[in-house]
Image (cartoon, rainbow, N blue to C red; front, side, top):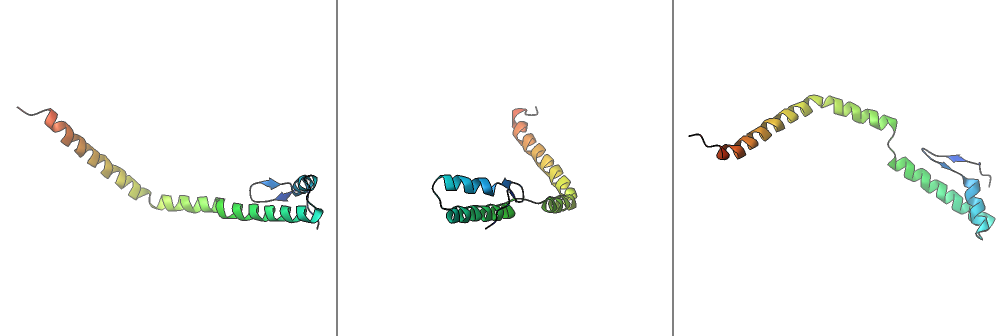
Length: 98
């Protein structure tokens, strides 16, 4: 099996050759070390593909948030009014009108 010096994955670099050398120096046979390196590379690729957000995902999220910007402003105003009413209700008994 031929290994590149570096296997480039989504966001990290995994040095397969160095990994195989370390496994061989720890007592693994050539075929065991190569199989372990392949398994590690496959696992990292799968983990990165399933868990890292892409630029496209961020653009889609930004678009969705922009679509709802008006709703967010309305909610902000409503919460401000409700908070003001609650404060007025709490403070009113402290200052009775004579």
